[in-house]
Length: 370
Ligand SMILES: O=C(O)C(=O)C[C@]1(C(=O)O)C=C[C@@H](O)C=C1
Image 1: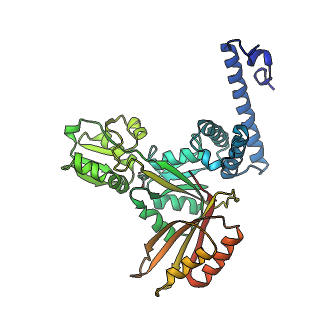
Image 2: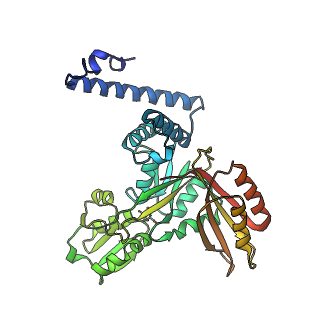
Image 3: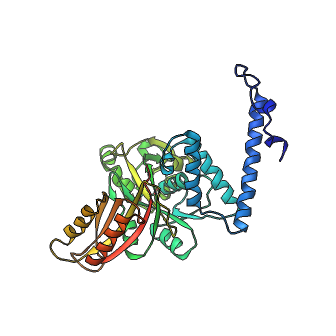
């Protein structure tokens, strides 16, 4: 143990409750923190070498419990996401994992896309994040095992479902092991002045979330759909006639001016992201389960499905229909409800659903985000 880690009451705590603390005491505490983080790094690499390192998700759950004990509040871990002490602990955990190159997280990039901001919120600032250029590529990276986790937008409070994501779940079997809620504040960013703007670039969902504002303020501008909000910011940095709808961090990264801030039509604009990965999180008491199902094409088929949820007293939190690729008038359904797949009532409902559906996939059970 180094000088700094000694719990030295003379150097790190005030000599009496009324005495003003000194800068030395602050320095001593910082030294202890740095030393503890180094010790933590070492333990993480030793656990990894012994193949005993918990997964990033397990570690996150354990961190939540530690934080709850410290604060004395019975908050489930996932709900502590906005707390800055929580973010700091998560950052330290991701920093230690980064030393051993453990967890890679695939997301729709480049950096500073909303998907990137959501990945940082969930996995921590220092997690090894791997940007790709499309939602399909996130699924591919997790499917091939190039990334341990993936992060994709699934639903927005203004605009509804994210079609690219639901389409990929239909085409490729993939598990959900977590979710992140991110408030989305869009900004009009440009390298020139307001008068120079003739085109506005962004991801279709972002343009749609600002549709009324754009129509009222830039009725003559051409709206151009691109792969991500950061890709739009990149173009705006190269051409003063292009403005981007993107995040403020993207604007700062590309040296753009925020011509207008918070231009989303709905002030309560929130996007929900799904965390993709092979892991199956343990029940926490506040969990959610996602299913993909296909019902027979006959009257009352969906009503029969709903009856099963009603009888099992499972509370639905989301239901979306999605056209079946290649067969007109047939639909798949995404259903989410409160509860975990290990719960007996969920198991009974799933067994019954299996007898009346043509396709049934449990996409995952995971802690509810707030
Ligand atoms: O382009 C981005 O920045 C994204 O992360 C994608 C995306 C989306 O497709 O919904 C994510 C959140 C916002 O709703 C707007 C864009």
